[in-house]
Structure formats: C-alpha cells, structure tokens
Amino acid sequence: MLGAAFQFLGELVGDFQKIEPPQQLALQLQNRLAECTQVEADGRHRLSITLPDRAALDNLSRSIVRLLALGGAALD
Image 1: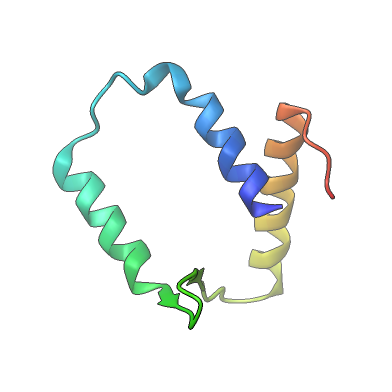
Image 2 (image 1 turned 30 degrees about the vertical axis):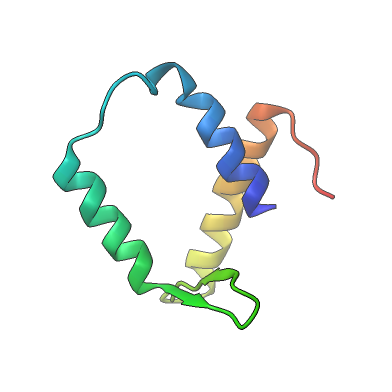
C-alpha cells in the first residue's frame, strides 16, 4: 500500500521532474531517511519510523488512503 502511495506521489510531481530540487535539502532528506533504514540479509531496505501514539498512525493511514483515492488506486 505504501508503495502505491509513493508511486502516486511520484506521478503527481511528474510535471515538476524538470525542476531540480535544492541540493542541500535533497541531501538532508536522504540522510534523514537513511537514519530510519536498515538493510536486511537479502539486500532489501526496511524503512522504520517511530510515531508518538495511535492517533499519529490513524492520521498517517487516513492521509495515505486519501492519496490513493485521488489516484484511483485500489488496495490489494
């Protein structure tokens, strides 16, 4: 499901792919995401985040569902 949400976000910003993001901002985001990533034995990367409470999880899931609905994606 997260993969579909990220794919949809990529499609949303597709028109902006010609615009180069600020290098420092891109590097900061990449570093922050790398701090939350673990490489598994099979080479796949696992992204883990810590949320303060159940409400944060509920808000995150509602936001992702809204993004998926905008893109017409179905949950598998």
